[in-house]
Length: 262
Length: 274
Image (cartoon, rainbow over all chains, first blue to last red; front, side):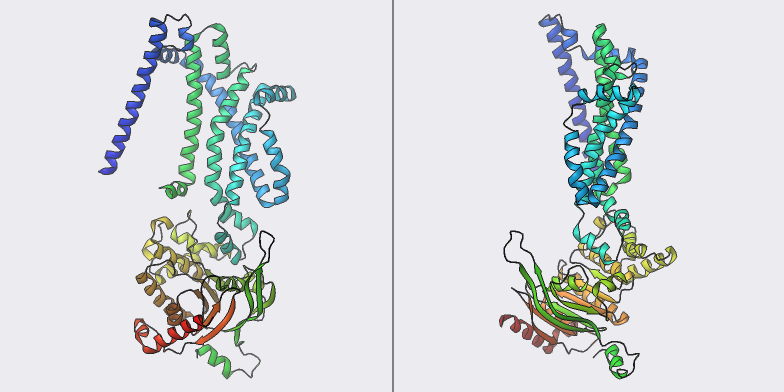
């Protein structure tokens, strides 16, 4: 009974928030357009309903563009996760390895994607591959760093227990270190998933022929403000969706992480 | 005197005799390096002790007396600075590699991602025991500690006392020959503690394992043990070994015997002498 009313309460809070934001949005757009008579009003802040209409009328176009970007981002994300995970295990196995690799990891994140993307493109000469490489590049860092901190945070008594049973390193990783670090890995994935999508969109904009970023550029230069705003909203959604996919996977694969919080 | 010990004495002249000493600690010193580069901290200083096979022996003392360090040294979780430990004629490392130790820590040290059954099962998986046998042993162990109906629960769904019992079941599941227990009951409420103490004695009487039991509770040590080893702190050293000649099997009535109090007082006085 209490649980139910709590759920209902949360639903009400959400509903009020959403309605309030839409109302504020419409009010802001109205102020710009009808009160201040700003000629750039549709570009600065279009009406909420016109963005929704834009989304509806360009739905097919945007959806296929989204799929292109998403699929590249996903491949890159998976590769980046694998690389990051592998690096974390290597670094946890050897302190020397960690000392060697960690400064490079940090340095790699200092290079802006905007600068890196043209270099990658020049190297691979293929837009799809560049998108995948950039998404992987963005993903591997939070995955490696978070997984490593998880592997290093294993409770020493739990390790002593493994040691007392004369367990070998592969067994210790399989039965203790990896399950222990899994919630940390997911923390990294939650950061990486929206980032890899954003990076893919960015690469789209640097001269791709397909993808949601192209829609952004095309509408921006073509003065198609409804399409532009619809694409922006779409991009935000893509980031959100990727985040919640990771959250859902976390609930399936590491249910104990949530139970611990509760 | 335990039956195994008598057996050992009677057959002492033959070559097939079981060694009288299960664990021999010779002049053991353990130092921890000081992180700030100062003098090393001496956790144990020149401790010598013989532990008999099948004996229930307790290590008591205030914090800082090195009782946990001594247990960890026997378990090969801590390397001695000097001196040595011989277990059944071998070094602790070899005994550990032969998987003859069962360890119960102060906290249950359960794996959150495993159910109760799978936690108890874990050491058997490492040892490569066939699945069918594992399942049977898990059932047997959970019945022994009275948690049969909780096999499918996760650790966080159990009370502290139940979690500790899972830890004990896990340690017993691989039939260790030497059970090392580091203040296993110290975090539990009085009722659970008394119940588990009696359970532990029942298990010990049934299985005749050697048990080394660390505690800071004098009455717990007297109630459980054949001998109580008193350690004093800074540096940790052996200050007294007291034989507890109370009849077995022991029960709550034991705790009301005048002799029980005498032993408790005797040990307490040996602390004050420190």
